[in-house]
Length: 267
Image 1 (tube, rainbow, N blue to C red):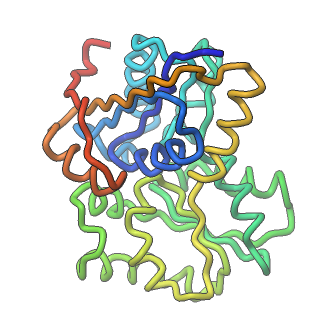
Image 2 (tube, rainbow, N blue to C red):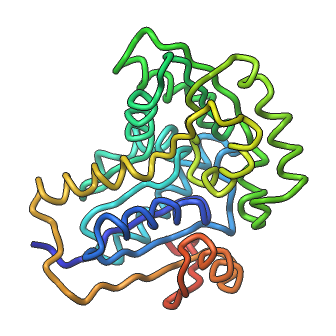
C-alpha cells in the first residue's frame, strides 16, 4: 500500500481528459495535476525546448512526493520521455502505447488515421509502435496544430473549429480510414466536431481509457495502491487559475477547488 498521490502532467488542460478516466477507474487514488497552460502548446516547439519544459514539470511533481508519474502529453511521450525516463526514479506511464493498443483493438479494416501535434507526427512514434504490434496495417498521419489552441480557448463546439477540422481532416476522409487516433490529450475535447466531420463510420480512439487500465495494473503489480479513504485532488497551473477552473470544471464535470498557480522557472 502507498497513500502518496499519483502525479499527472500535460502541456495544458488536455491532460484532464486522462485524469477524468483515472478518477472513474481508480476512485481511491489521490491525484496531483499540473497543466503548463502558460507555455502551451508543446507540439509546435523544438525537441530541446520540450525536454527543458519536461524536466521542470517532472521536478515539480517529484517535489510533491508523488509515487508514480503519468505523462498525459503525447508530445512529451514522443520527444522527451525516451531521454528522461531512466532518471525519474518512480514508475512512469505514457499515452502513446495505450493509444496504439486501443486503435488496433477497434480497427475493422486495418486503416488507421492519426492526428496529433506537429512534433508527435514528425517523431513517427505512433506508426512505429502500432506496426511493432501489427505490421500489416495502413497508417495515415496528419498534424493538426491549431486544435490545441482551440481546445485551450474552450471553442469545443464552434463554427470556426468545424471549419479548421474540415480542412485538417479532408485527407483522412479521402483515405477511407475506419479508426482515428486522437494523438493529443487536448483533442478529445473537440471529439463532437471531429466525429461530425469524419462521419459515423470512423471510430475515435483516445488513450485515456487504456492508460487508466494500464495504471491500475501497474499499481497492483508494484503494490502501490492507496489504502486511504481520504482522497485528495490538487491542481496546479502555470497560467490563470480562473481560466483553469472554468475549463477544468467543464472537462471534469464537477466543481474544482485546490487550484494554485506555480512558476516552474524555479524548478
